Image 1: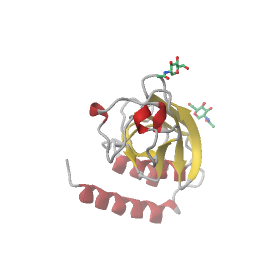
Image 2: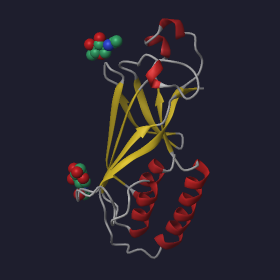
Image 3: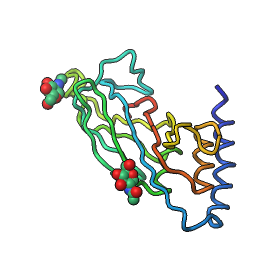
Image 4: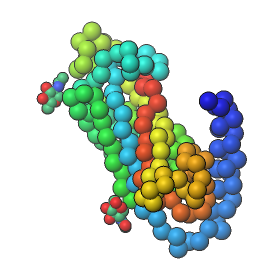
Length: 175
Ligand SMILES: *[C@@H]1O[C@H](CO)[C@@H](O)[C@H](O)[C@H]1NC(C)=O
Ligand SMILES: *[C@@H]1O[C@H](CO)[C@@H](O)[C@H](O)[C@H]1NC(C)=O
């Protein structure tokens, strides 16, 4: 895996290009982008919680939060699995979704899944990570480019982004 700083640097360069060319992009270009965010909620405290080593949090209620504002709410199932489906999202939202501008925040207190954690003070949350892209063309890529953050940002530049963005969560932390 490439060092995070390199990936981030590449992203920033592409994002800067996006910002400078967005104005010149055809204003009439209309896309209909959806996002599917899924994950498993852990029942644990700590930083970067490893899901493989802790119990799951059944029926947890949670929210997708963007810049301090609630985008939507969801509830995990009995296996701690949640799915959030966003339909017809605007480009700034797409951008925030793929560049760590959103997070999943669990509302249900940890005491609900483990009584010994009832006194824990903090909030369980996780940033998002990009899993893939389905443009509906079957290729999974935009313009022949390999999918991923850079591919999506190039999609934004070209105003061709549509289809479905698949996102998961990075590790949850309780802070
Ligand atoms: C956008 O896509 C969603 C899901 O495929 C669909 O339900 C909706 O009608 C579409 N909206 C427009 C304006 O095309
Ligand atoms: C989760 O919710 C389902 C449906 O309401 C319920 O049947 C199940 O017992 C709940 N699980 C836990 C561990 O609370």
